[in-house]
Length: 185
Image (cartoon, rainbow, N blue to C red):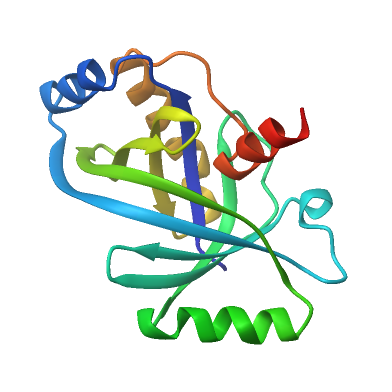
């Protein structure tokens, strides 16, 4: 089975208040990261229609290629995710190879991410506070799953944690689709 990522995203009107609440309920601050995500468009396949994504993520001095598969049904976003490391100094070369094969750069998403870990009944949960350039502040709650049998428990745990953090309505759109929506309007 491909690894699954279970996640929920929420708009955060007051990031400092949310950060304080994460710490108050036992969140442990891990690190602050700078992300630059470059999304790619397939030459023969519409990733918007197939609900997939392909990106190169640069985190500080590291780089990864990530494929996200079609979302499964449910109240939170659960989808297959494969992430593999790249040598950071080769990112431009990889982008050139993919462009030569017909892939196109869609857009870059830049964000500052504060990463927290919480130990919950179903295992470790990652909570991030994201400041996304051009969009604002968000919280993501995520957990990696190794089996489909973990889906229901992960959904309950993530939604329960969202309540504990006083988060509002789930934002189902990706950062990329929010940014693209701004340029289409």
